[in-house]
Image: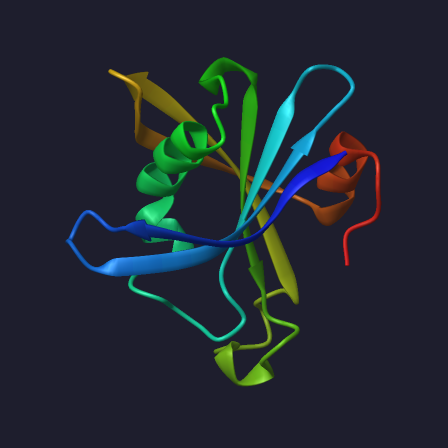
Length: 129
């Protein structure tokens, strides 16, 4: 069940204001899936990739989420603006699972694993747009 779906603003590590789109799904198994998407109008302060530790940390604080229950997914949607695709090898969408080490309630040392839209849909139990 989707609990949060909207623009998420935060202060980036470089001190600039930044934003992305965040969707939080509470899954029956007790898992909380946090989908962090690049905004359709491009980078707002930082890319999701460069701000991923701060986004994960701030989302957990803002929505009172337990880090151990969260699965974080970084999402880019190139369907909105084909001009952002630098070559034909870039997929229409990308979904990457991100794991963190947590130190004093801060996400650090991210590790990415490629995923698929279908994998995320199975976890949340619904089709994504």
